[in-house]
Image (cartoon, rainbow, N blue to C red; front, side, top):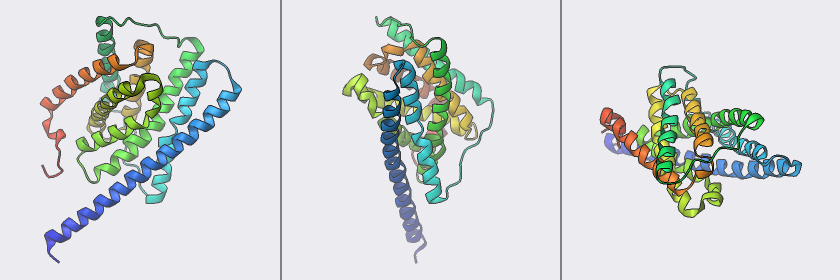
Length: 265
């Protein structure tokens, strides 16, 4: 058989396998998400209590879905983990970058006439929010960066793979439509894609440290709670997107080799 033809055939088969894995992962993830939302929403809703506290536990329950999905997918395909729990210098970047993104976005909101609204997360609720944020970030990152990103990278470059992960990750937040509307959600999607590119960049530069991803994810959400809170919406997404574009452009100028579109480029 012609060598070039055989290579093309092998690549075609690998591509189909990758797409199948992605479909299985995402399909399972959506099913598990809906199941957990109904389960935790039903159980905690029947118990009653403080709405903020209940909301935190329901969200944390739903955030288990990427972890559960990853366990199932790994079992099916006998897939090994492709990440580390390494503590390295990029941990500082993982702390600073998300805070920077939200602080500048919040400042832009204030300058545009959308005033700061003090968060209602205080005392015990704040402590629970911090704990559930870190736990939720870990269970999410196991799935998005720890599993799905690796699957897609078997066929595409890290940069392109991060775009696909960002799209799927953003759409998974479909429940946001109820709070920000369809237009708001359509603006939300590119902000998550940009966030995925930035996080994946740090992930690869830090020897695929999941610790850095959990810290980045957690600090982004916690800073959001303190500075954005009820201001999340179309204006915030536009501001955040603008800041992300500037940051990623600066990274591109400094490390163009990472942003390859093709593996052989």
